[in-house]
Image (cartoon, rainbow, N blue to C red; front, side, top):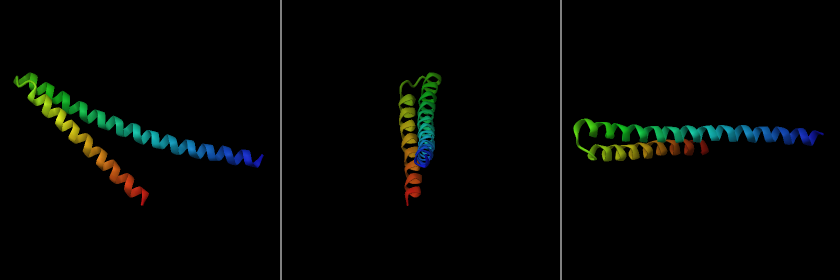
Length: 84
């Protein structure tokens, strides 16, 4: 009976770690998507107002991609610090 309790505790431990990792990655994905969508929509809106289609939309796409790279780099730095 003791072995079963240890296995159950181990499962709960692993499940808890997995859930925390999943929430971290979901948060990262939402942050990346939100930053990209924000810049693309801002570029689209500015194009509509200024009549410069598609220049500002493309600038928004570029800024959104830069934002995604910056968020990923920040996350990787934090993850590397935790490992060492």
